[in-house]
Image (cartoon, rainbow, N blue to C red):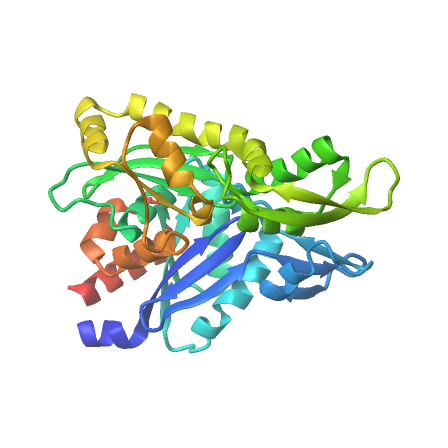
Amino acid sequence: MRFFRRLFVERVALDLGTVTTLIYSSRRGLVLHEPSAVAVNRFTGEVIAIGRRASEMLGREPYDVEVHRPLRHGTIADLDLAQRMLRRFLEPICRNRFRRIHLMATIPGSATDAERNALIEAAREAGAHRVDLIEEGLAAAFGADAIAPDGSARMIVDIGGGTTTFSIASRHGLIVSETLPIAGNDMTEAIREDLQKRYDLVIGERTAEWIKIEIGSALPEGNGRTVKVYGKSVLGGGTEGVLLQSHEVAQALEPVLRAIRDGIRRVLEQAPPDAAHDVCQSGIVLSGGGSLLHGLDQWLSDQLQLVIVRAEHPVEAVVLGAARLLENPELYRQLRVVERMSYWSELYEEALHALEV
């Protein structure tokens, strides 16, 4: 039976993020790492480009093209565009019509039933035969190897593009979880606002993201680097350039970082005493693209007086965790988000379980 399951069922993990989408196949490993973006003709509605090609147009769109992000704060905001994007992303995997696709998708713990149903509908329309959901925080904990085998609790902070998820988990499941709609995109926007306020200079999202990567830092002194930034003057409307130092960017990012720090404190306050004790002993693991900000682990450690470490593969932690859960049927049945299933879905669930046994 296991032979037939391996032959006809492909397990796929999906991290559908506000900024980036990652897909992991049990057969081929990480098969997709693309921006969550869709370029559309503003007059006809025709899809021009999806993923990286669409993202390359951001801030440089032709007059007849609009670039959309179908997700907002980690959940689907535009169902039609999300379905088109997912269909394109899953196309190489769903090409074999004789193979059943069992997809595990991650979703923020704060997602409503409507948002969860929208993700399930989009995945099924894209070609998945069965869709399970797992909370992002739990997936990140497994993907970052933050789950202790002895059952003790560990805290994982996943800083994505649209949301930051704070989770305390053990191998038995989530203990406490909170999702904050402040993350990497807010860091980028904070840099844009600061340059406009400080230098009367308007810059685009792409330029602000480049600044964050090049000289962004959580440490007050920055990383010691300086870049030349060009933008449009608020006063004259012409193009101007300024020399921007890293410590200035650190000042701009401080309100966002304080919000993340306060989120950690809130979750620790909500945790049972023994779980809080475990976290204070073992420390906190950071994951997600936002955790790559220079000095963030050190800054949080100084602020919280706790050990803070970054996951080995922070960007891929969520999708890797979902993939690991898929490879352990008993575990994912215990930890997945249970949705109301139709009669035919129940039959398929029973049949798949029989193959696993």
